[in-house]
Amino acid sequence: MLHLKVRRFYCHHHACRPRSVVETLPRLLPSCARRTDRLTQARARVALALGGAAGGRLVGHLAMATSSDTVRRLVHSMTLPSIGPLRAVGIDDWAIR
Image (cartoon, rainbow, N blue to C red; front, side):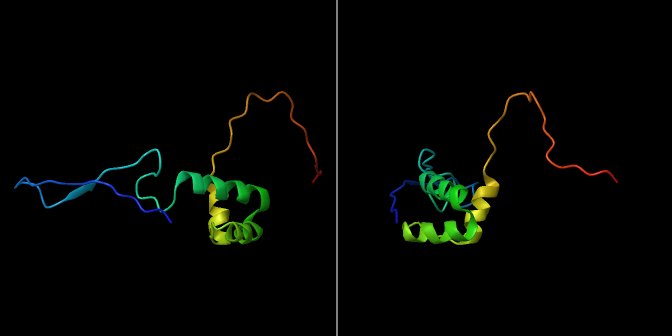
């Protein structure tokens, strides 16, 4: 659990509706995040290694509890690394119909 102290700014101008703005911490949390980038990356590494159900069980033992569905969503939301131009294409299976 992480407890943060952040500043809250208010607009006292009469034309503005009463509204407050909280300072962001971009190096620690994306806006409206419920977990840190570091925790998300750690869960994603476990998810890539083990997959859904097994990854969900392991992160529970590592005090990063989450559901197996969240583990699967982390894998699906990851961006693929860019690859260079292809030099050769192989065909594993084929059928004539």
